[in-house]
Image (tube, rainbow, N blue to C red):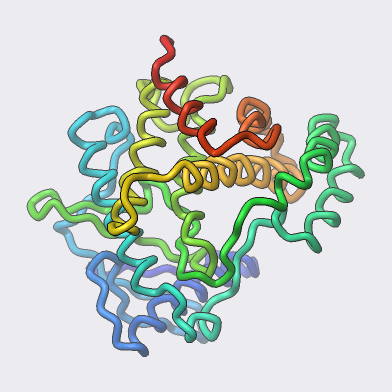
Length: 304
């Protein structure tokens, strides 16, 4: 079955996402790289901005109940971390990547872009946005201490269960929708998924992922996916180090902040601030590395 992706309007950003996904598949084709863990690319009509892909009927979309079904979530974590570690490792330090992809770095980690963003936030009439700008300024040193590896590898940047498909007869996953692909730090793909789970824990009404996903199980998923990814990506380095967990959790809070800020500044959407406030402690002070493992374990052991 063929799938056509084409812009339904002339919006520049949407056209760019289609072109970006085409660049991803063109890179694989031109470099003779075979990956059975991503979607099937057929053709890109550059004049009309139409991307043609092939979809196998053997693959189904992932349902939200995956997050609350013990067997399904185990398979999902195994599949997701296998795909991400495989892709990140395969393209690590590939010198041809900059010819095909833009470089991604969170704005709050960019010492040149961050002041401009804070300036825009302070101009807003929204008190939460202004308070957050002041908070970010007060923890500037902590933010700047977060290690970020520029152009480390290809990153998908939109890791969520909706962007995976699954073949149950072969127990095989594929990662699709590469519109936001860029080069950057491999941790970010784990961060984007964990951030969605973090956001679901915040008291903002009905859970947007699955109403049966308890906070305790959400924290368990976060811990398991970080551990599974690290072990697969770095099989010779032993168990998950506290420093890696610290980096991922701090970047999760950075991602929650940026998602809230940009949604408000760009689209006037004022949601997600509860999640930002709930997890600011991850950036509040220069905790030791061991704090972060204790933090997750305490959350998992709490009664809800």
